[in-house]
Length: 343
Image 1 (tube, one colour):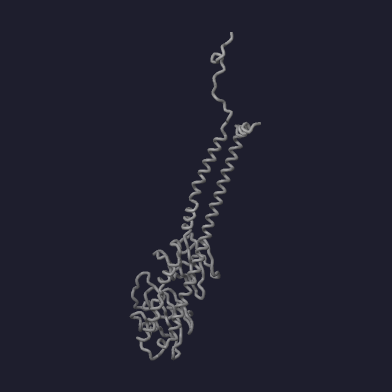
Image 2 (cartoon, helix red, strand yellow):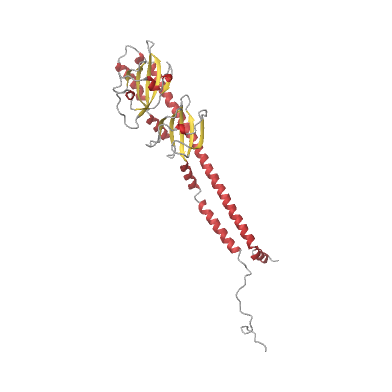
C-alpha cells in the first residue's frame, strides 16, 4: 500500500476517535508537565527566599553581637577609668569622661553613672544628675540586677533618658525609646555602682536597613520574652510584643519556616539567636513578594500553554476530517448525462 494511501486510511473516519484520544492525552501531558514545572519553580523561589533571609539573619546577628560587645567594652573601660570611679573627682570631670565615650560610639545616646541607691551621680544627658531611679525597673527585676563585673541588657524603656523612670517624667515623643545596657563595678571605697549606657534602637534599625539588600525584607530585634527592641518596619500597627505568637523554638539557635510572622499570617521567616545575649534576630519577607517574583519569571508560560492547546485543537480538527466524504456530483440520470438516451 502506498504511503499516502496508508496515511489517509489512518486518519480516516474509522480512526478519528483514536486520533482525538491521542491529542487529548498529549494535551493533558503538556498541562501536567507545565504544572509540575511551575510548581517546582515556585518551591525553588520560596527556598531561595529562605536561604537569602537566613544569610541576612546571620549577617545581622554578627552585627548586633558586635554592637553590644562594643557597648560592653566601652562601659568596662569607663569602670577602670580613675576619672570615673575616683572619689576626689569633680562632676565636670566625670561628665567629660563619659561624654568622650559617647562621642565615639554612634549608637549610644548617653551614659550615666548611678550608685547602688539608684541616684544618678553623673550623666551626659542634661538634667539627669541628682535624680533617683529604680535599678530593678531598669534591668527588669531584682533577680536580674548584675553583680560586679557583669553586664545586663534591660527591657525597652519609652522615653529619651533615665528621667523617664521617675515619677515626674516628661512625656516623650511617640516612638522615642532606649535600651539600657547596665554594667556593675566597684569603686575605690568598695561600694557598688552602675554604668548605664542608653542604646538608641533607631540606630540599630538604621544598621539593619543598610544591610538588607531588598526593600521586601524586614528585620526585627527581639528579646527572649518577646519584646520588640528594634525594627526596620515603623508601621503604627506593629505591636511591641508579637514574637510569642511566632513559632520560634526556644531550644533552636536558628531556623527558617513559612508561616506566621511579625507582619502577617503567611511570611517567609528566618530567625537566629544572638550569641551571649538573650536576643533574637528575625528577618522576614512577605510570601506575596516571593509569589510576585515567581509570576514575573513564569509569566511567558501562561501564554505558551493556551497556544499549545489551540494548536492541538486545530490539529485534532484537521486530522479528523473524513477524506472520503461524498462530494456533490452530477446526477447519473440519463437526461442530464452527456450520453444520448437509447430508445
